[in-house]
Amino acid sequence: GALGQLALFSLGIMPYITASIIMQLMTKVSPKIEAIAKEGPAGQRKIQTYTRYVTIPIAIVQGFFAVQTLFGFSATGTIALVENQTFMTGALLILGLLGGALFIMWLGEQITEHGIGNGASVLIMAGIVSSMPQVALNLIEKVRENEVPAEYVVIIGALYIGMIFATVYI
Image (cartoon, rainbow, N blue to C red):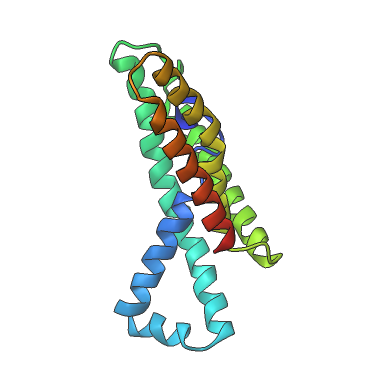
């Protein structure tokens, strides 16, 4: 829901995850990058630097499409989220989304460096856990309206708790 609210961090960690996947695939395809990856810790730092650089155009492209989606809302007859739909407005929105994505990437790296865990995974898990209260409220509302049997709440609650414990354990 962050994108619909024009949140600065709407792109989240996904541009960085996409860049990481691309770089992992490139190490299998490109002999040059594979050689760098095999250089040990120094090579891994180079690959990590390349991943950061690849994150930038990916975030720009994702930001462009997010902004186009926001601009398209008024074209469909719904309420315009962005009234001044000029090139400069779009560029500033994309730049803001890029800055938010790079900040999230940096935050993930800080989490990893300080030994808390894999930063990207921790951020993804935080996003999942933060949505749980709203999901629980929606589920309770559906039980009240007799759309969902009450037993499902217990089963889903046990699954959520089990997922949290399994994630923390791993």
